[in-house]
Length: 154
Image 1 (cartoon, rainbow, N blue to C red):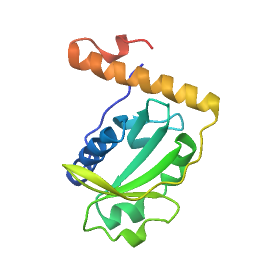
Image 2: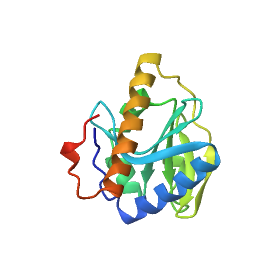
Image 3: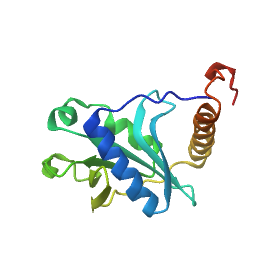
Image 4: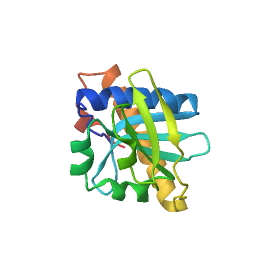
């Protein structure tokens, strides 16, 4: 099983890098550009030792935020949903019922915690399994770049 990793826009890439560092400090391991079962791609999907799933959507500018109508669909695939923005982004645009991080390439600060909404056990199990398979496939491609992704089975 594989998942494609696409390059993020430079501003979003810096935000995601900082978010991932901050999530690591909170006990989460993460993947970027993670394809969910509904076909959407989460900018960052993170999991902690208890199996808690966090999704973070990076927004590098107001136009990107306003153009994005898909983010509500991510909530069905996580226990907590955050937006991450840079310090110049007007934080008042972010809905109150979403978590908020301010990030740069070196780290992130949580300005508002995300409300918890626990995943159903069957969905959590399927999502955690897919996360493990995608992470292993990505490592495999790094270790053996000559091995075609379609030769991998999950």
